[in-house]
Image (cartoon, rainbow, N blue to C red; front, side, top):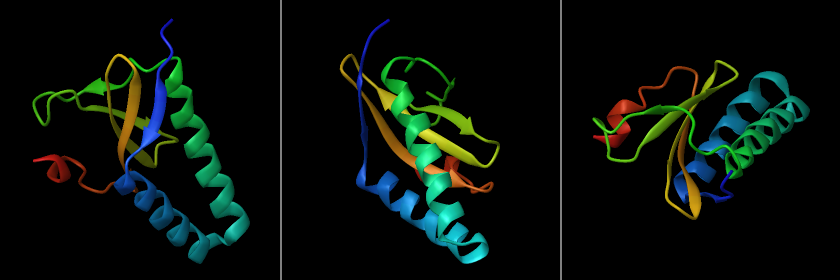
Length: 100
């Protein structure tokens, strides 16, 4: 199994902050930070099992999409050395339009 380094784009980091803010407002900081930590842990798991998700080459070459806990859509790409987390979309956002 190939190891790849996982990196987050600035847009993906911003998405995490926005998800945190939304959850923190609705459910409090403890629940929000716990959820963000679960997302980050899941994404870092792409280090070993990076060839997962649904390929969306028709939207953008190399784009892959995978769901997290039925609430977050994770958009990422990979090459031989790394997995790049491109964006994270919460709660049914129209992610396809972000890549056209």
